[in-house]
Image (cartoon, rainbow, N blue to C red; front, side):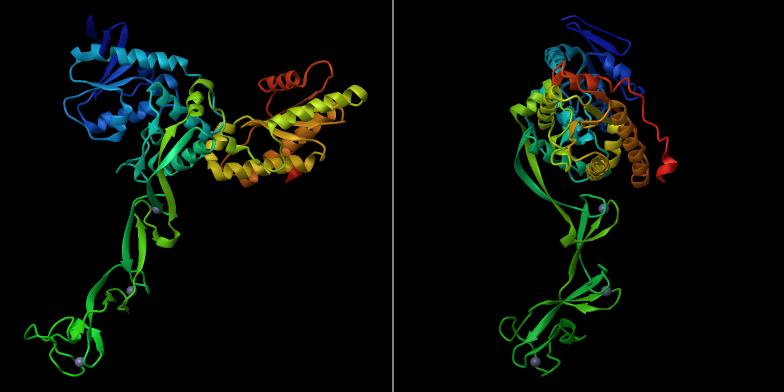
Length: 482
Ligand SMILES: [Zn+2]
Ligand SMILES: [Zn+2]
Ligand SMILES: [Zn+2]
């Protein structure tokens, strides 16, 4: 096979490979440009950091790129070993990775790219795309010193900063609930209550002052006189003989005339003497000294991609069902469509006006990833609360997707419907400002008149199509609401 090498690039079998060395600056455009990347593996840290940057990138042209390692030594690191696609020992061997590059490139072409609307969904999407393009079904948890929780799922954990890594476990649980993975037990893990970190130092501490600085000595029980006291009460400065301080007899054999029933600890900080210590777990990351009974228990599992999980790669995964299931005050989208159909039937026999509208969070992705799952849920619950409060009970609401609510506004003129939505948006924006200070919510609303001319499906599509050209709602009357 013909190989040519110039300008840090090498051509083989119709593919262009970029060779990246330790002195090359990071350039995602360059990574995206080549068919495959060869990392000059001179240094473990350099290789690891580059693999992390590529695999955690948000663009599929970058994070799905075939990566090969040019090296002469073996590197023991799950990040590197699990996330590269092969090894060459010299640039002459590039032809050996051409087949692999071709295979991955074809699979990457089949991936459907979608813009996931929740952060969790985006992470699941990326992970599955990486697995499927590598023909992998298993995702194993590796014990790993560089992981913030001590266990690492290379394809997923790579996207998280050390301090956020416990989110990986929540996302995998969500994926399993949605039927994308099945799981098997790997290990049990305890996390810090303060920072969710997994590196804990367990030790025995004084029950009075929690100091771990203590000395320990045996307690001695002399059978003939029943005296119990610390070993030093029996010792003398001259020889090894033990004498009972109560009856003065010499102790002979352990088990025969005396035994050591327990230990006595003396705190070197507060001088408290105790037999039963407490156990605390100090977090190496945030230094919080945890009561062990409060530690957060987690099961570490190994995951296997299901058929449904594989299909995510070809159909895209926009939102996890957990994001929107069981939000009180809403109906499922399928139910919404049926109710809409009935409303159109009713319109045929009446001459009032009914409408459908949307309320769209223009910066949902940003908000959701900034808030984290729990606060994201409470934001959604608050929004629904405001809507429910301002709509009549006969009007119904459903999630169209992670950032868009659709609703019915029946038996009112379209102009009034739009005014109601506008007012609700303004109210929501100012309430959100108060409760979620770090995020600015951007909302778009629109209502259109229902007609009996075209199907409910088509009218919903028409409505959703107006999202892009609807201007953002501004908080015009914030003073009124304050
Ligand atoms: Zn901690
Ligand atoms: Zn103490
Ligand atoms: Zn005695």
